[in-house]
Amino acid sequence: MKIQYLAGDDAVKRPRLPVTFAPMERKPTADTAPVRRRGTLPMADLDLRDVAMKVSAAWKSSPLTLAYTTPDAFEQNVVDFAVLLDERMNLEASRRPLTGELADLDHELNSHVSNVKAYIAEQFGKPRSVDYYPEFGIVKVGKTYQLPIDRNERVAALERLVTALTKYSLNTQRYGVEYWKEAQARYTQLLYQAGTTDSQRSARVKDKNELKRDIKQVLQSLVLLVQANYPDTWRSVLRQWGFQKEKY
Image (tube, rainbow, N blue to C red):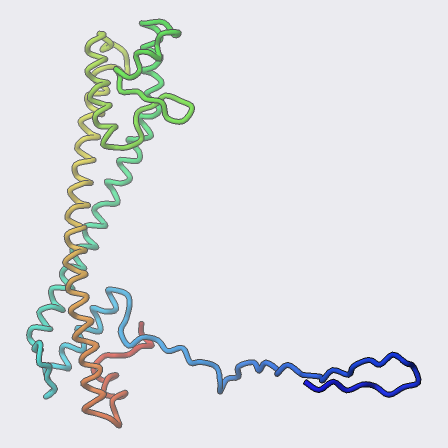
């Protein structure tokens, strides 16, 4: 770089450096901003079911074909998908009451453990009562002694509690053997029902996801097929088939 010097009467010569300007940043305008497009296929299961049903009916009356599946096979997958969605929603609806009952029973049991601790203190003396807690299924939770929080562990703790109450003849109190036997039976039954419902729901979700993947694959293939066969009118044809993005 060639350095130029300022002319002047003083003996000190200062170099004049070239001046550069940073380019101005342009903000995107309506014409230059990237366009965000919505997907052709819906994300929600119910929307996908509705679109697939419409597309299935349209495809059956169309001459277009795919090499790896047929309109009849696709229709059956759509019907199975709709059935699994209904079953899953029914299972979720039946699970909610069980969840509420278990939460209520947990709260009830937690409140009555204090009665058991009072019985233990009365029979063995307060200084030694903590030593007997494990035999009664009572464990330390945070800064207090309670039944285990984990529900599977709580089932085992309830069994130990009933056994210990019987062993030490603590069966005449209001919250003695009879109460805890009944509570144990209720809790075990509710937990079993909830677990069975969860297992069924998990199986339905797995089947549903497999069908969903196959249905989306066919729908994407049909979109490309329509675009290839109707180069000028494919947008309107897709709308006629049921691909209406504004509805999902």
